[in-house]
Image 1 (cartoon, rainbow over the protein chains, first blue to last red):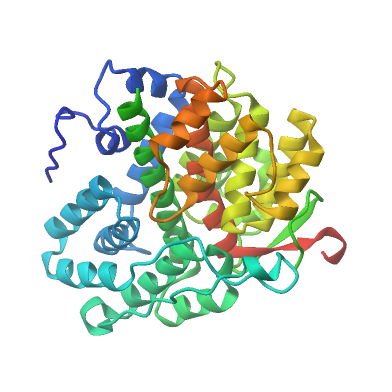
Image 2 (image 1 turned 180 degrees about the vertical axis):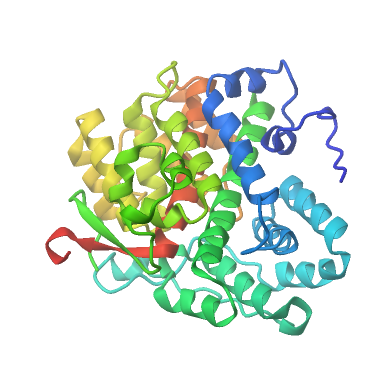
Length: 203
Length: 189
């Protein structure tokens, strides 16, 4: 797999690559002040994308979900990074994932709070994505994409029923924990990379 | 279901966590802090131990690394603002307590919970809350203007990177807590 972001050749830290951080730069020195976070953000990536086992969630599923989640964020370097990984692993899925990214476009966070949680005007309706071509993705990825869209844009609407839908599509409890970690970790990685890239540009 | 509060809440999982006496050595290592074996949330996350361990050490360094940077109170403020914006009542309750304790400004923290991220604050907290909320939007809405406001409020680049790390991390934490269970009032447990 290759991804050419100018000036980052040879960097293995994914956040550094996505934020355009080069060795010895001011951002590199800033990240060095939080070494535990830097190392373990990378270990998180490794745990999710170089897993010890594919029993619960396959590598193709992980990368398809990542391409979808980062595509929904419209975070260019991250979306390109994961789309390229998916294209290497399962080129047949790329077009279907791209179509879902386009169809799933929205602006968040939104969603309706359970009664009594927040003022009524804070409950904002928005799209509840349904996969357009379940046949192209298969039942497991179809359910995973619909759940990922929920977690990306309207996490306040997460529910027991949403987990039931995953179970019906063949997701185990452990697989659901990994799926939640995937979507949640990517929500972090995209934001750290975007924030640091902006900080570097503003320096 | 409870509203946004600084009170102590419980959390109940929607999936079965391993029982405390079923935890293996790998599970316990992933918990990092052994006392977390008492928490159904961390036991549930231990179903995937590698990512739990990496998540937890990332969290600890972002919030507890005391080598300069943003005061703990304001890292917790960024976590609270992010949780308030996303709608994670449980995360907001925990980190509002930390923010109020470390800043000794419970009234300002409570106003953030009651009225949301747009509630009145002083310039420095305004800049931190606005940057956290902008980073929490999907797609991201953080701009050079937010960074300029943080600088104008007296934050240097390390402190700004702490705001970015804390707000970004809670976009991870909020989605885990919200997706796997729900908060409960302590008296209902």
